[in-house]
Image (tube, rainbow, N blue to C red; front, side, top):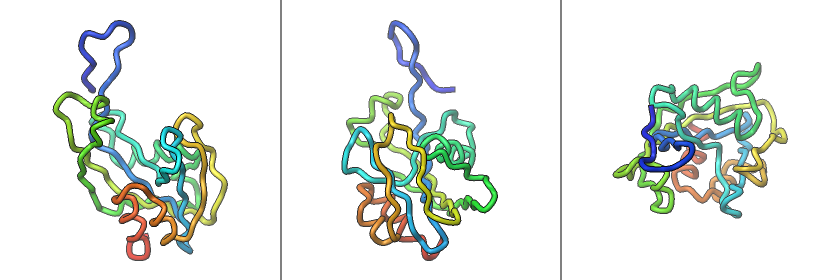
Length: 160
């Protein structure tokens, strides 16, 4: 149901939906997976991504984004996806606002945890990410460029 860019020749592009997920992938002993953005070397983060449709459930978005960005199946045996019941609302960085409909300046991000049994190498989407690492939770929080991502990781002992 996204709007389309007006007056563009060729294929129409849909605006991004200003609702997204943040998925902290971790192990029972609080090792956290971070992935490095391909378009911003040195910017480490958890899995993030926007809804593909306004009616896509946050949980379905989380499952899809985990699969797309890491190759992991959030619903595989031994994996536990938890909705942490948290939403972050923040200003969209000015350099990314052109991806959203005119006038959209804020995004709502729903936070999930995905507990998997042990650290594993993941299959990155080369278009989006260039590197990966597993770190103890406090080190992972320190490495994140996004304050909301760091805060979510710091909640791991309570919510994970």
